[in-house]
Image (cartoon, rainbow over all chains, first blue to last red; front, side):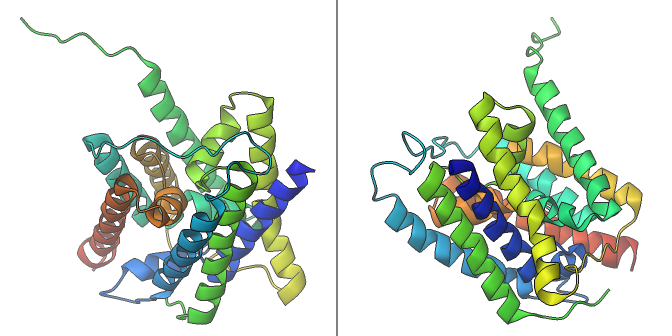
Length: 144
Length: 143
């Protein structure tokens, strides 16, 4: 039962992405091309998603626990460090090159288009590479 | 490649994205972040952690078929970039979101909605980097 509900939540997310056009790299990239073929749609998508989430979270988080879990799992990290800023900047460069972000690519996989498969495979390789680098022991400081 | 400004579809779609984030918090107490969902699906902590993420992603992947049923056409996927760019972009996105701890859905929607300082900083960082990258590719290199 809980998997069916979770599946349907995924459907709602996916429909939101495809209806808003965020599974379409041309549309996403045009948002950032203010100096060229500008399409402001992405701002309306993020704005409405933010408004609904902000209000909805306020209501939901008043409860004591989620429906299918013992407690809410909210991120607890607080530090504004180089990893956060640099990592996000690298993500932005990749997004600007390819036009897909992870949330746009996952629903777009359902179109069966080979470009989405290629991007997603590279994305998974990037996730795996970061995981591998992070898992290696930190090298001792070198030099005299 | 020109695309039409579609404010109504943007508002409907964005509201559905927000609704799904609220529902996931309500049902599972989790942030709707595509990065976390993917990583948790590929390297699951346990069977349950795998199963709910698999169900969620399966739902996402079903959406284009439902869109096809309702409208008679698949949602448009226009890719104005080359295959090497898709691969390079994908690698950088995978690396970046791993270190940045999230992407557009996790930081840009869910984290910003919670007014998380980390998410606000991350979102400003990736939006600026994407803007600069698109400008350089289209108007400096390609211009």
